[in-house]
Amino acid sequence: MTVAWSEKDRHQLDARGISIDAADQQLRMLRQPSHHPHLIRPGRVDDGIQQIPERDHGRLLEIHHHAAQRGRWSKFVPASGAASRMFAWKDPQDLRRLAEHLDRFAFYAELESVASRNGHTLSELRATHDDATLEALLLGESGLGLSELPKALLPFHAYGSTNRTSFEEHLREAAACFADHQQQCHAHFTVSPEHQHRFENWLVSLVRDLRSEIGVRLDVGFSQQKPSTDLLALDQQGEPLRDDDGSLVFRPGGHGALLENLSDLGADLVFVKNVDNIAHANRRAVADHWIKVLGGYLIHLQTEIHRCLASLQTTQDVQAWRDADPLLHHAFTGLIDEDADSTDPAQQRQRLQQRLDRPLRICGVVPNEGEPGGGPFWVRQSDQSLSLQIIESAEVAPQDPDQQEIFAAATHFNPVFMALGLRDAADRPYPLQDYVDNQRFFLTSKTAAGQPIRVLERPGLWNGSMADWNTVFVEVPQAVFSPVKTVFDLLRPEHQP
Image (cartoon, rainbow, N blue to C red; front, side):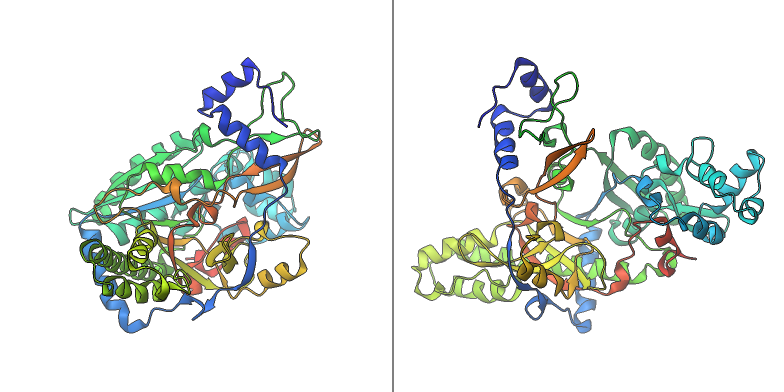
């Protein structure tokens, strides 16, 4: 079934930079059954997940340091999440619980001041159980207005009489891990259009403060999801969703849309963390250490890959590609064909070059302690080969008990703690879109204006969007993972002074 796009439709699509062919492709994807990856087994230590011995840490830290000194590193933080989700009360007692622990939150002093301006005291509101007024002061326009902030600008951590947002904490982490020999560090945040001015205003004082306090100069960029990555949806009749005046309704493409933002950086080495995964400074040492260890390991592997590629390109000796095999077997488990020895040497060299010459990532994974999200799994590909991929719960066939059982058996979890190598041996940026598994898109059902709709999300940034990268999974300590999904997560030890 095709759509006869009207002139108005074509104008809308063109204004977003979406071609008619791309729109038609979206509709085909929306109208087909959901595609689910076929899980074989979870990745485990020594079966797809590596452990880096402590004896190797010193050497890897030194490798990372030299690259940082040369200005090769940047930090990339998806920071578009809304703080309102943190205050979505799930239990009638949530507000009472918040009131009881109020003085443990970094925004306590500011809340006390705004309560006083409105003729209240927090002790009075807590004693009288006036939770409605407390909620209004905390979230409303006449109060702190926390629900209107992006999560990155919410006060996360207290330091005596001051506090820090996660935005500031990420910049301080970048300064500690990635500053170059001129004491400059590079960081990039993806933000919502309506909030970019807030980030820019905060940045003015942060640039000044970090320069005077620790001598680091910040080079910070911002970008937004591109309109060209927006997606159509289907109404209950299976037609493109439209609003009351007949205009097409577009939805954000999910975090997989940020692949274009990452590509546009033109960066060399990039470390990716989520905006809510940042600990108080007094508990950040473990994360800083492992950022540098994974960074050093990435560069070590990248150097070996470039050496192998150079050998494959300059020699006809079959030993060149045989030397590459152990690297692939060790670092990129499962990429070597079982019949590799029977392959013609010229074809084998070409195949190895294609396998080696692609973006590289090191994914830190933590032991699974029940956090929601995905992890590493062995997956059967369409060509029947096995590949180790990050799989999220939304991708697993919901009606297949065997697949659900495999997913539930995961031993490790993806905290989004990733070191990325984005350039080839000639220092040219890889075309990241060429390494996306476009079949890893998400199809879900939602409700709009009281009506069921079918929506599409692009392959997730660290799921399908990086599916064809060379990927190494490394076990890292649980201490690197300190997420904040609800306001009560800020009461965890890793977020307390």
